[in-house]
Length: 139
Image (tube, rainbow, N blue to C red; front, side, top):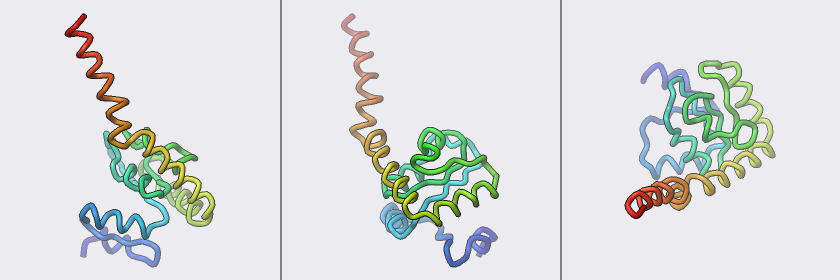
């Protein structure tokens, strides 16, 4: 057992190690919130998007791509990387307020549908790129 495994054992928290895609979503279904405490600038926070797709509010470090995914106060909370006290306060607020968890979870789910489905990504990123290529060839 690693130090991480020992530190994160408790009645409301667990460390499960590496999971398959299916297992990951099974855990999301059993969860009330998702915490993404990154300390490095993740270019894209897939865990945050997956959790939001599962209807969970997300507490994430205010760093890298996470700040573009999580809308502070709407789909979850952002906190300064490495600030355990602020993270704990955000977690406590969410765990103490089921209505807030539900509202943020729903807002996150809607954000995923609007921005992160394959159709949305193609429409926002790929179609404009291909239109530019096409104009270059014909114009």
